Image 1 (cartoon, each protein chain N blue to C red):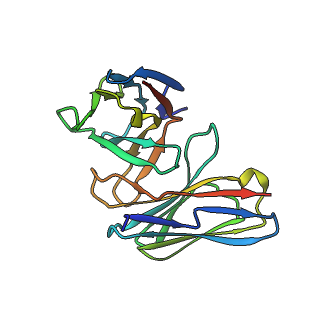
Image 2: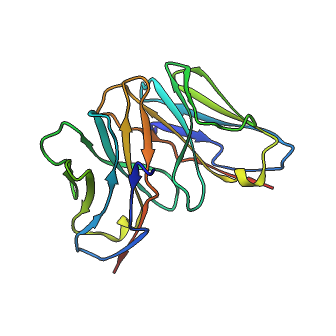
Length: 116
Length: 113
C-alpha cells in the first residue's frame, strides 16, 4: 500500500494566485516527519518545508505553508502568490523509524505549472 | 561550496563498462543515501549508510555496489548495467535529529546503451 499519496499528477495556477498541493500519508509510527521538496527541471531536490508529527502549529517558510491535519493524515502544501519560478515537480515525503534507521518515503509528485 | 556534490553530472556507458558515481557532503551529516529516479516512478531508495555502516539495501541488484569510506563520501560502483538502469541517481545526506531534512545533490543522469 502507498505510504505517501499525491493524487494530483499535474496542476496549473495563475501567477500571483495561491495553490494547494495535496498529500496524504499512512504510518503507524507515532513519531514521524513530513517534508516537501521542489524539483526543477535541472533535477536537484530542494527542501521547502518540514512538519513534525508532534508540532502543534502548521509550519510556514516564506510563501510556503503546510496545512497539517493529523487526524486526516494529510499534509498539504500551500504556495501563496505563485511565481513563474515555482513551476517544477513537487514531492511530499515522510520520515519514519527510530533515529539511526530513518526511512524516507516519497510520493509520486505533482507537476506544477505557473501561468503568466 | 554547495552542501552535497555529485560527480559526474552526466554519464553514458555501455552495458559492459564499469564506472563509479561519487557523492560528497560538507554538512557534517552522519547518514548518506542513494536514490534512483526513473521517469514516472516514485523516488526509489537504494542504499542507506549511517556512520559509514550500511543500514539499508532495498533489494538492489548486485550490479550496483555502494561504498562509504567515511561519513563525507559515498560511491556507487556500476558494472554490467542494463538499459533499464538509465535514470537520475540522487545522493542525499541527513543528520540524526528528528527535524532534520535530507539534503540532496544535483544528481547524475545515467544513460546505459
